[in-house]
Length: 214
Image (tube, rainbow, N blue to C red):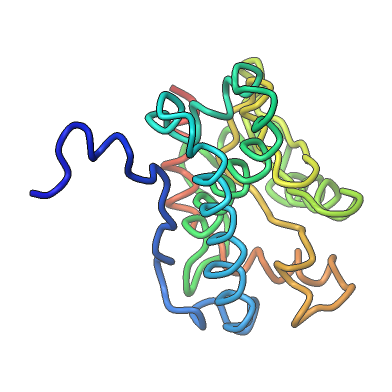
């Protein structure tokens, strides 16, 4: 056991999670090269930059990324933007990798399916509304399914913002930054969005839903 009390406090607090499947697992919908660059380079950079921003703030290093973003206005102003952008990138991608899998797709079942039906009508209606939020997000950002004020809603955010910064609890999200799809789809974002539904790991989304609902 190397790190004890003092040493542990100085360890970098955030680490890049492993991708839960090989880079090519989501082919043909998302290509292996995109997954490799997206995970290793983009997500990796967010983690490194988040740790760098927190270097001189040991009190903040002890917080989870969720805690940091939920109280972003308490983060010192000189590092707030870096924490918001890179912490958001870390939190968003950590969820994103998990809600996809090889052989995914189809529709949700159980409580989650019931909640979607109750909030949006049919699954097809939900998908149409979600696709619209993802397609019309100008520039870079995300589309989300989340709880806000106890209700299930669809929203989109700019850049790497996560709804947690203004009290939303997102449990399903789609990355519509160009780096998520450009190698395969170029400027055809709607085509990427449609293909992405074939990768969804609905059992993970259902677990996320149950946790967000609590």
